[in-house]
Length: 481
Image (cartoon, rainbow, N blue to C red; front, side):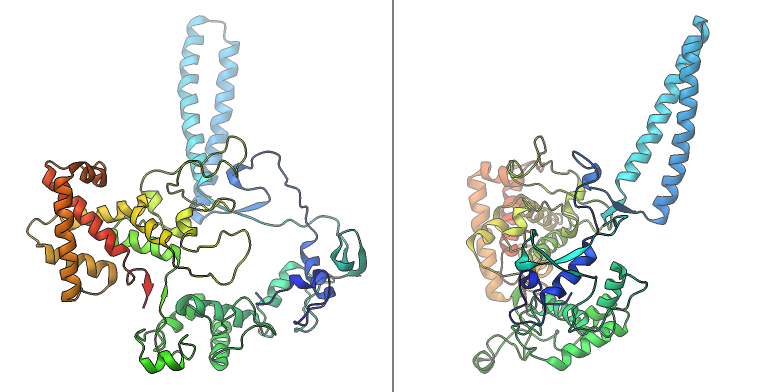
């Protein structure tokens, strides 16, 4: 929120930013009044340790309340029937009651199943619960846990605008309000800079994790102030800020640079041209799934587990816990919904420089390695996406190879191929068609269960699949230009 490193003040005064050690422990005091031990033993329900809040929609809450009532009433009837069956002496009546009990048990289990499925699909978020008795917070001398010093109260850094308390003792809500107060000079600027970084690859302040004394000065300070002020005045409306950025002439520039621009401003800090950088891992995956038609745009709900290599969880999970990939179309939901285990994140994401989330980061590093190309060429999900788009290209038997190629190229890159590009790709297609006609086993492996009548059809699908896969690997496909 503040774009500065506070942790240095754990043991001593900050070396270059105006944080004192007392400032650090005054902030720490806001979070020092919770129990660190989990409230339940063993494996938590739904993967969450309480306390947590359920974030049900109105419709979900209404339906869940109705089902809870029906399950409760059904349970009473079930208990009554069980008692009657146990007490009945007449064999014929007992048999009749047992039949009723069996029927009602099935009804009760069906209602319970409906309720449990609905309850399991409701989003839940872990929260903090305050202790009933306050816990004193001391400054720790040289950061030593067993060396308490001065008693400190909940407060914000002394060099920033003062905290407004809602009562005699400051609360975490007071802290949250302080962060988004118009008087706070940092939060809006830090947020605006991060969003700018998202769309331009580099923030107006290049060191987006550090807007303090050691950070780089803004390349356009007036622009950063303008974005920050408009962000606050819009009611912290993220959509409005994003729209303001992406509809600007600055964002809509082409990334083609002249020789003079390369010489005078190689990093494009003055924004004389559009930014050019490789997209993030999640964007690359979502784009590939979207262009193939596999992407599922369903919003909300639980995380999903796309397939991963076997055995990755063994060294980082509790005994008996293992990765079980989901099935069906849900595995093609947007990457936002991909299940993320911090000890073992999805490798198809980390290879493309997604953070592993064991610590907060403000800026992703971008690398260019052979493993990234190998991932896009060989990962099962991307191969299936290529096969799906190839299958669609071949659905119209009257279309020609150049027409199919132009459609695929434009779908994936948003531009038509020029004559040279088209000829290179058509030559590649001919080579692939010849290869898979001569090696039907390889074609079958790429087709992977798609039912086709002839070897020629399988070779054709395999050739187009590999061609589409090559298009997914083009620099223009995974680069913002």
